[in-house]
Amino acid sequence: MWLPADPPALIEAVRITDPLGQYRADDLTGDLVALWEDDSAPTLIRALPPGDLHRCFVPGWGIRAHGTDGPLYQVAFCYDCHGARLWGPAVPADRAGIHGFDAGSAPARELLGRFRSSAGGL
Image (cartoon, rainbow, N blue to C red; front, side, top):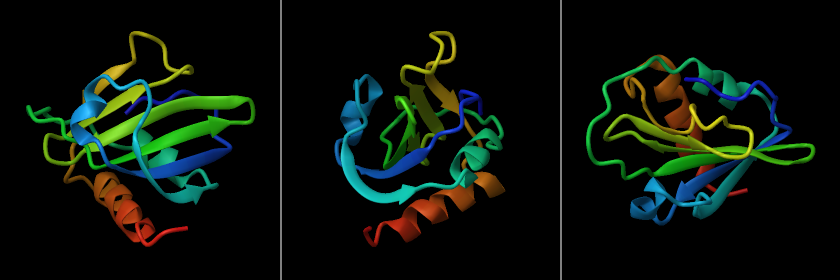
């Protein structure tokens, strides 16, 4: 999956609390479950292979990526419909939107495991 080239300085891992509102939300809404300061999450997201997008888009997890000068992008992940919505100030208009990904792939499973293990709190 495509992500902006700017490496984030910080990533907020979010358990989404308003999944139905994420289709067009300006900001990812949810509970902050972790702060990730390494570059492994963007690496995993870039490695997500394309997949067939199904219909529901009710995401449970997401990230907010921040650079040194402010927000870069947000991604909301629905592992049921295999959709990831990408948006934010560092995302060109033609790249923003919902993209299909292979939710059963190794990078997707590793990212989901990282979300779940982070849900214990900060």
